[in-house]
Image (tube, rainbow over all chains, first blue to last red; front, side, top):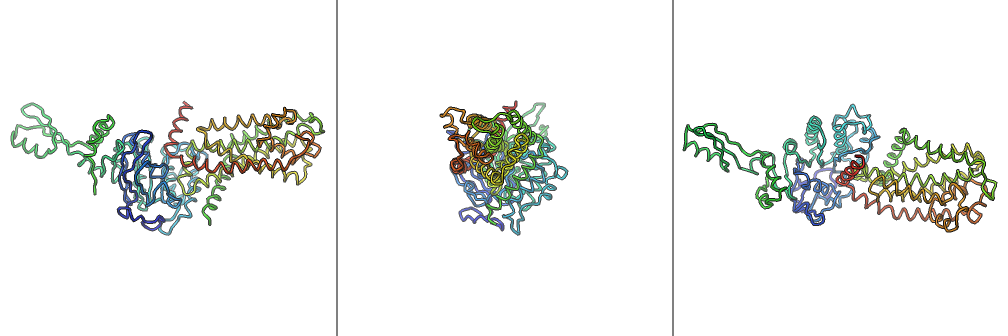
Length: 320
Length: 284
């Protein structure tokens, strides 16, 4: 643990820089397993996206990590502590970006940020000054012109930036964002992505965010965890996932006016063979690798239609 | 500084800020003014009637009683309303996400509900005194006793408002669950007419609840001894008043913390989302 985290170092943790360590997490409502053995780790400074279809258990997972919800079974360590027993000192190291609805509508932006920041003053250390001063924060999230405006008068995008400002006012070691861009228009969404990139560079903040949008996950994260059917079915960077989750490619060509399509696991070998056999008769050659999107959609579809829970585990992959 | 004391101070500051926001808000302040004016109207019509067996005007008996009732309405309804609304809109979850935020939140609520009640009581007292000028001759001791009774009344009722606000599913049910019982209890508690006009068993029920005792306590504080003739037993019972109110306060302060803790533990983003969904359905 670095300076400024008061939580005692946990000798059982696998690596001193694991900010989040989840092992065999299970959550059961009645007879339904929402989470069925989720395991993953997040290291200091990483930006990790938990990607999955609606209802996959992303929110449940993140709420357990935030200490807002008890799990049914499993081992969870966040900043070295069990979230369900995290004390206020532990809480002060976390930032949680909540989606505002109409809370604090009559407060002005600057007043609220200043007030909420004061709760972090006792947790300030020389290496991590807490809180971030309200004006600095307002600059950071681009709400300078709205700083004296009533919160109820903010647009959806401005409101979401205020949510982020509230989430980081205590200069957190670890920041959680649950579906942060839900309901934002494309322009506001892009601005929001820029903001998350800036946050990741700030103070080595570790970020865990959830989304059901693959493009968002690709854009924001160092690493993507795909949660489906209550498990992590894939884990890696967008590139790694596209390459390793599926090696399937489609080869298309034409020969003597006829068109052919052939799926293969080894496109290179197939094409070499094809050309050796038919030489210049081959035209319109095209090799297309399944995109991450194809793979993701296929995976989600398979799980949602209830087919084949076993097959997804074969896709599982650990980058380290 | 002690961390609990530190956030409690932040909370009081927050409560003061919210109180000022409320004062600036046309809706809230307008409501208080309408409230005060409608009571003044009641007093105006009662100014010439006298209470049977005494020389007191009915208006002079009703004004202190109303002040007592307002503490119950302000703290129970105000507390339950604020808590249920702010659970629904996510204010409480925000408090939960910051270190010791819940303590700050509750300190703020106690502060703002108290200040709101004080303002509402002051407004009604000020307009009421126009029609009941004889109460202006009340001495220091009387005003001090009034403040003491109202303070004790706040302690006796505010925790129960918080309990109701914690268990209800929506602000609408918070309103129903506080307004209906308070209305029913007020009707039998001798606020708008001496309780001795009611049947004995009804008087018995009324004396279980804080509304009657708050009214009795405020009348004891402001009215002359001769007015006691219209009270149950024909005399003032300040000790019993303090006893019953203190019992409600102690019970409330014992019940409220675990209820609040349980409620706070259950707050999460998905709980807010579910409530937002329900609220949208109510509107749509």
